[in-house]
Amino acid sequence: MVDQEKVNPAVRLLLDGIGENPDREGLIETPDRIARMYEEIYGGLDESAKVHLRKTFHAKDNEMIVEKEIPFYSTCEHHLLPFFGQAHLAYIPDGKVAGLSKLARTVDVYARRPQIQERLTGQIADALMSCLHPKGVMVLIEAEHLCMSMRGIKKPGSRTVTVVKRGEFLENPELARTFYAMLGRA
Image (cartoon, rainbow, N blue to C red; front, side):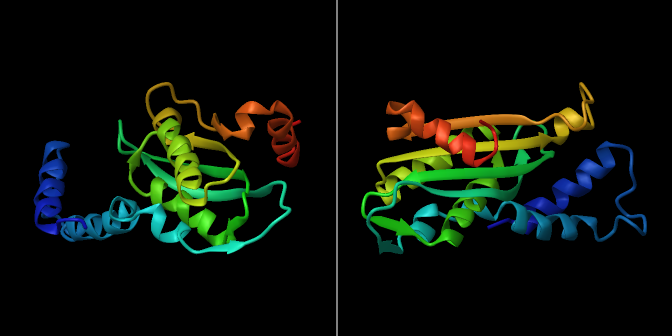
């Protein structure tokens, strides 16, 4: 839960610090807008993936379930600038599966907090492993980071790709190759 009584004066101080007048017409309501925005984009701080992944369904004879091209938006914890892209998930169930929307919600839980992509990838994989108890999980995330695109090195369009494998995906390289092929990356 965002503490509006702390965010509002902090935003006013920041505006003043960059040489703006926080009392000018266009900025008067900005602290309130920022606080409301933070409620939305950092809502994952108050959520647990377990809430979404606890409802499962019995299913047998599934070799691999893939949910790909899940869009997400996050915030780089180093510069508080957005990074955004797509997450691709695969898991090998061991008798139970989650609803497909729950996989996307799991991505959102971890993306909606100050974050680094490397940690985000691992958190998603670990949540699927601990909640679904599958035989294996693989997560691939590709994202553009505005801290790389609009400041510093200024390389718009560059994308960072992170991969995490757990369980049978680590033990059997053919499973990882199958996942990559399903993503069109073979």
